[in-house]
Image 1 (cartoon, rainbow, N blue to C red):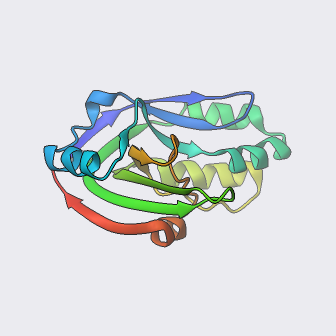
Image 2: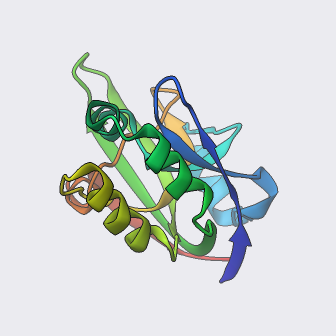
Length: 164
């Protein structure tokens, strides 16, 4: 397990915030690449960890605290630890598309503190999204969208194991 400093990209218009992860920082094992290819998955051409998704961004926008949130983002030490745990997910979306993805679980050590401070700023309880990077998708170019630990459990098809 390695700690990697990453940098946030904050979309001031939509309010979302991602941690950009360089492609070479997650060394996908050969067995996982083979499985993904065999099962028809498409490798993502960019990696990120979503910290603030569109739904939470709207809540922040409605709280009218954009400057405080921006300062919190800038003053947080954003580091990820790649855990090399891989999970296959599936979800039928509102359009009836059966979306599938393979993710790598990561840890963001400052995530809990960040969300605790964010809750204080906006005055709303927040479900912390499971930290992960989508590596592969099938039937849709974007990932599944995990907004809570319950989503991870609900959309989990199978654990694919660990590897380095």
